[in-house]
Length: 304
Image (cartoon, rainbow, N blue to C red; front, top):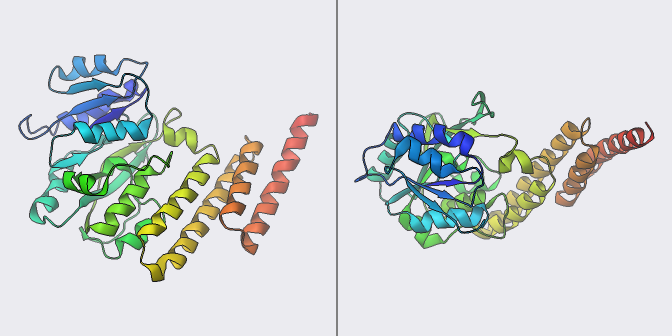
């Protein structure tokens, strides 16, 4: 299931990566679910795939979380893969990730490492290795509750898991996928594939690229941390939540430093969110240093 919104320029690459592994309509449903885009993704679908790929268009823009839900509602398969219309999969993805689910009915999902790419498709980074060999992850709930360790194109989930746990949480604007992976980890074993089989694209118009420049992402992650705490063992809630908050505060401060030269208001916003997330002495000291530099930069620009 391929959710899209104003990403037709990348959709061809996405579809080709799937169609190259297409076992046929009897075994794989391929459908683009478009959130009222203005760049005519249907023409890309028809030109490239004819009737092999179904196309559904929302009557009006509903936002990516509800568009995800539409994908789940329209899906018919026993295993569901949500593949953003600007991401892609590498050869062998479907065979490699389906096999553990076929062998072990107790598994709720399988996911692989992913490769981050830029707008042109150039590789930027590969997600960290979580264990030396493929297999079921131990203590996965606590590990995934500390921070996002995978991206949506890299995971496939059993249909009955989504049906049992419900849809994505609409209270979240950016981390609804992370909260879902935590929920799955709290209820099912999860298989990890060490090979990087998915491509996750970050570009100027993507939600990741846009939201990463605002402190709204920090606020959203903080909300997700609170929601994730509901799925942890009572005796571990405080420890894991503190660690997750410390990681988030550090992320906010590092992002603030990167924004100093070109976006001092954005840097200040991230400093504020770091303090709201974890007002520890160390965070206070780092925030004060960055905040002072941002204020000086603001004054310099106003007087120049």
